[in-house]
Amino acid sequence: MKDETTFLECWIRHHAAIVGRENLIVFDNMSTSAATLDLYHPLEPDLLVVRFQGFHNKLHRVEHLLGTG
Image 1 (cartoon, rainbow, N blue to C red):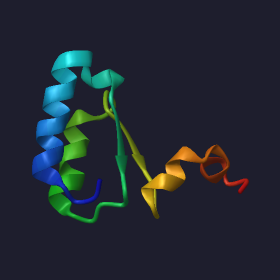
Image 2: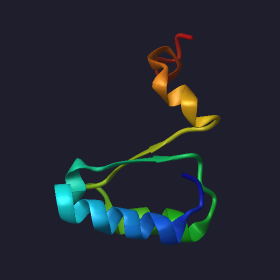
Image 3: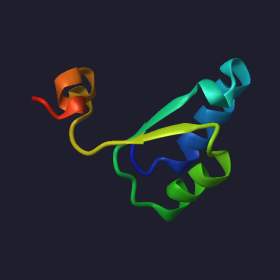
């Protein structure tokens, strides 16, 4: 997701209530919105945020994540 502050805030709250914030991973497609980035800070270090650039389907290719492909 990218710059989806309202949706993201609801999503985190909903899923954290089910599994705990420490069990969530947010994949952020290089958000630039200050509101979105500010949302992460009070949730750290419990919330893991992985920032990536490019098309989301590349996340499913391990070699891309490792920089080997």
